Amino acid sequence: MRLLTTSPDNLLSNNHILPMEEIVYQDIVFGVFPVLGNSVRRAMMPAMQQSSVEDIVLMIMQALEAVMYIHSKNVAHRDLFMDNFLVEWSPESMLGRNWTRPRVYLIDFETAVHFPDDVDASQRLVSGLPFPDSMYNRERAPELLISESHMYCPFRLDMWQFGFHLVQMFSKTGIVEIDTMWLPLRSDNPADRPTAHEVFQKLGDFIADVPPQMLHRAYTCDPIVSKTLLVR
Image (cartoon, rainbow, N blue to C red; front, side):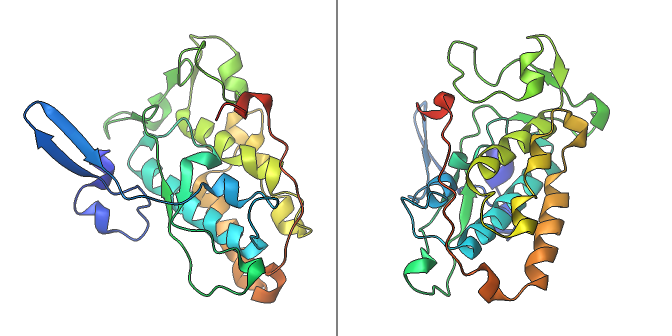
């Protein structure tokens, strides 16, 4: 957290890490964070929030900025599901056009790993589950199912996790370019998964090419919640 939230990087517009202030009292260190609203995952639930496609797309763009930033710092999150992205508030533009936008923040770094710059990219590998098996209730990417000793790329794992809720909850908007964008993130072969930068560029190019009115629509893709996520 210190690596990602300290000066000068904490002033960067693409740094979506929740700001942290440390208060030290004797041998106790308190971390103080701003209070935020709900998760991006909740914002994607049509039954819970009156979000437009545009609302969610712009949240996803910010979330991708967050992923690009931490990956550029050689940090892999390893729990990069949409309920670990929080928004300041929900625009709910289907209740009325909202011209201001909340900021998206990435939280929960207890499973994150950091690699020094002098470690070759091909050697930035880890093994095992993000949490002990008895505690790990998340959906598991294919590389997590091989064996406890299997070495895998945590950055590619991040992208599988990032795409998990998008495939479940945001792939029936009626806009083909959006609905087909997420499935490659769930590829069984980690090497075939696009990077955050590639998805950011593709989604950004699409947004730039379409009139805003095309994205100002409701969607009804009710979430399919995995049993492994009911405890979250």
